[in-house]
Amino acid sequence: NWEVLAQLQSYFKEKLFRTCIRLNTRLVEAAANGKSVLDFDPKARGAEDYRSLCDEVIARTRPAQDAVVEFAPRWPAKA
Image 1 (cartoon, rainbow, N blue to C red):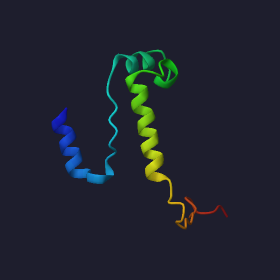
Image 2: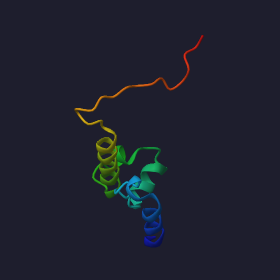
Image 3: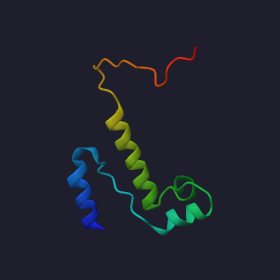
Image 4: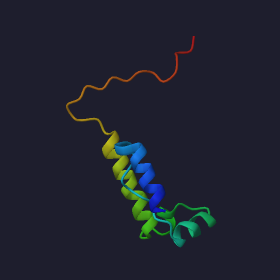
């Protein structure tokens, strides 16, 4: 509902993704058939929404081309 979305936007601000996944029957049917909506009906609104979300995640997480990126290990090295 729009009130919940407004509260989320107010709290998370720029951390919240702009893409919203709209609920539709093709999403439910895909899940009921044990398939991804992208495989079940790639032209469904839900599939389009998930592709948009993926594009947004990639755009936000891709490092700038001129940025120096240092990777730290996630876990301590095993002895």
